[in-house]
Amino acid sequence: MRVTVQGRLGHNDTQAVLSLAQAAEAADGVGPLSEATQLHVRDGGDRAATNVLAWHGLSLAGYAHLGAADPDGGRTGELTVQPSYRRHGLGKALTRVALAEVGPVPVRFWAHGDLAAAAGLARVAGFTRVRELWRMHRQLEADLAEPRLPPGVSIGTFTPGEDEGDWLALNGRAFADHPEQGRWVMADLARREQEPWFDTAGFLLARRDGALVGFHWTKTHVKDGTGEVYVVGVDPAEQGNGLGRALTVAGLRYLRGEGVGEAFLYVDAGNAAAIRMYSSLGFTHDSTDVVYQHPPLRQDSVVPLGHGEGAQPE
Picture 1 (cartoon, rainbow, N blue to C red):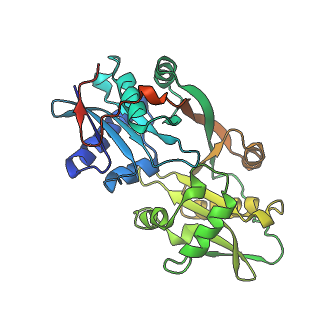
Picture 2: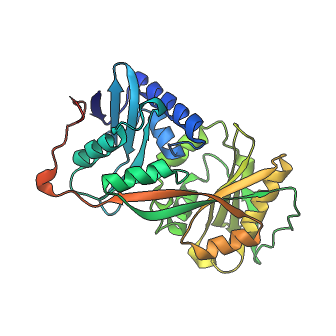
Picture 3: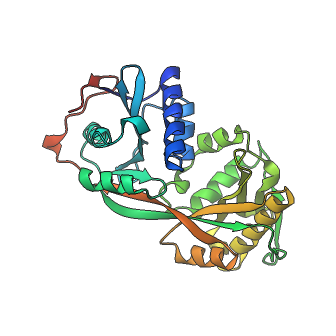
């Protein structure tokens, strides 16, 4: 087994990672990599990220990804092992290399689907459970009342080439305390505008006196035809007036009008207000993603491989 640590990925590495992710999803019933990580891999990544690849000959046996530094200096990412190479300590070896590579900072890994194997790896590797993200879903055949917009607010749709700056500014205000969404920059939005699922008609914008005050970005998944409440954001000055609920309903009605029969969304388990609203709209909890965190390593224990170098895991 040979391990390499890289920033950017070459074409062959990219294809190997995506194939590994497909094999893991087929075995586990849930994909191991988030949309953001998949986009990173497909684009080749950047040098601010850390990619750990474990090779057995020409076969990619395991992969770990850590994104650029979080606001607290820590690093967050994901890890997966080829099903045929599991139960041999490779997951623990990948975490050990990742921890050493990034230095004395907190390291967090997402575990999608809250699988028992991921919980077991976290336990033996010294990680603790620190965050939960709920997936909630509902059928769209049931009644959906007309959205009740606050006075003076109207809904339109996103116009590429015109609305990016205003949307990013609002997204930053709406998700100022969110560890992922609030950090979006133009490149994040531009990547998704190029995706085959991107649909301006399903990207709803709410305005008051011409100013953008809220949005509901919907997404239809090509693979299974389900709809997603991709992102709902409201200006802090508008919170509490029902705009978020109205935008959510408007987006669900749009998805239903497009023939989508089921919608889902993700919400932090600790966001009680959002969960109450989504529950009142008929959404129910069906699965959980988990973040496991490892405390910073001591400085004297950090021995990174260095980008592009290889090593034999113990």
